[in-house]
Image (cartoon, rainbow, N blue to C red):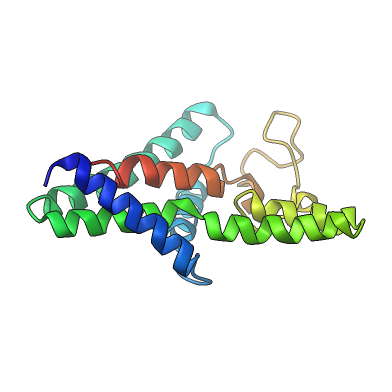
Length: 173
């Protein structure tokens, strides 16, 4: 089986898995990535772009290294390669969850409850943060002291970014 077919079969299986299973309530791979990225940020955070670039390099580089190792280990087996692509696709798609959240927001808007709809938007945009939880801006005018790490709301890995990172690294043929 050629690599493009491995990718096509794996992607189709991952999309089907998302449709049938949706996202798990606990232990989602993207949530785990977000926790790791948050821990790395806690260790590396300084009010300097270079440290931010290092944080990004560690998180993206680690994801790529893990995906490359898994791909290399499973490449001899076409079935395992399809399964890896399916798992990576399922992990990054999130279509079932997004459709569910969009339905909740839509029903709130139809009922004229704009505050309820607004409160749900951060959930559908890749996280569980609420806009009111931000405590400062990332720029020099921030109310944080230079040695205080940012709150969880400033972790740069939104659901969309981490899903894209997984998609780019783990599902490539």
